[in-house]
Amino acid sequence: DGGITQSPKYLFRKEGQNVTLSCEQNLNHDAMYWYRQDPGQGLRLIYYSQIVNDFQKGDIAEGYSVSREKKESFPLTVTSAQKNPTAFYLCASTPLGREPLTDTQYFGPGTRLTVL
Amino acid sequence: GDSVTQMEGPVTLSEEACLTINCTYTATGYPSLFWYVQYPGEGLQLLLKATKADDKGSNKGFEATYRKETTSFHLEKGSVQVSDSAVYFCGLGAGGTSYGKLTFGQGTILTVHP
Image 1 (cartoon, rainbow over the protein chains, first blue to last red):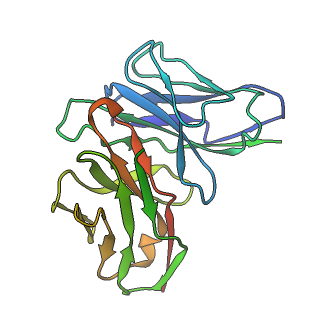
Image 2 (image 1 turned 180 degrees about the horizontal axis):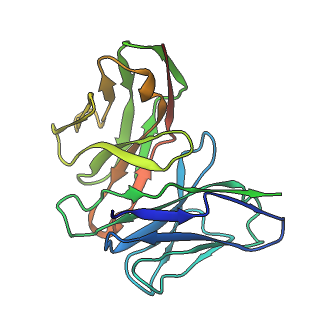
């Protein structure tokens, strides 16, 4: 089955530690995205990538970093510079031009990060 | 810039009641419009979409019509079920050089009681 996997589902870290969230897709999609979800605030875009070895900042990139070394993988690192990292993190992908409706995004199940 | 405004929730209904969740948008050009649904503890799933004015998206009894004259994409269902309890997000895709990026509303929590 094709899809997007995020691991782990729940993640606990101590304050001041960096943590990396995994996102893998086997849909052969070109673009990948990371969102942060907080209660009552909807989804906010952190970073996105259209092709391998290239990525752009979204609306709330401060305190986060990403890499795109492979088409299938787009890991997100939450650094100690992120002041309030406890949130639900969602990864998504889209094919970009491989179907008529290229804006449709497909989401992973999410990772809930709690910083203690 | 592009923006999406959804009616504030939470919305609480009894089973078999009618549902309307309002969504209006601001965008240049001709965006695609989406409704996504999120069940507790899960990611978002595409519910329906429309790509041009007067298009109607539909799925699982839900419908929404792309109204360019009122810049709206309201979600409707004639008879809700307990299993429809979830968070609903309206989204907009500007296409072109937006590289697949979507702009989402803040989400509307729907709770349906038996």
